[in-house]
Length: 149
Image (cartoon, rainbow, N blue to C red; front, side, top):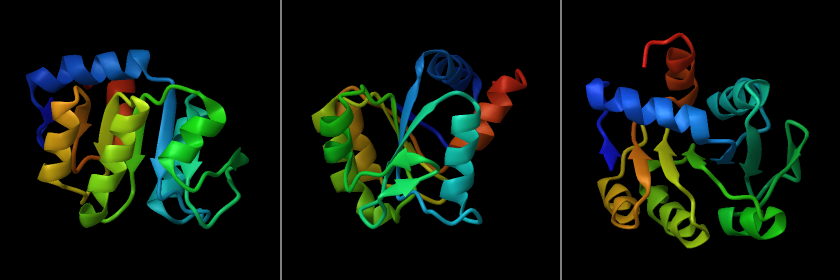
């Protein structure tokens, strides 16, 4: 299912279920720089008790977590089911990431604020993945923690 940019009643149940069931988040394009949004979101997720898997081919470790060059490599090395694939990449770079996510059996594709790719969303949805586009995972999680979703 593709969740729209605007929050509506249908989102409430979907996000609530996601926050109750997700434990592992792969962060694609995680930066080692504390001032970058990807770093802040991943740090927040760790603080909230999520298992965070950094995916950045140029890094060995970020936030004390082993970094992997690809989603496929992360899954092969850890064997952990990936509940959310949080994407911090340009919209045009999303389709191959979604193809990888489908291949490893991920459950949710989350494209951060400013990231929208309808083709990738359709691919994910056709394989049964939930899709969120153009939203910040940290903002939505905080909203849910405050009882707003």
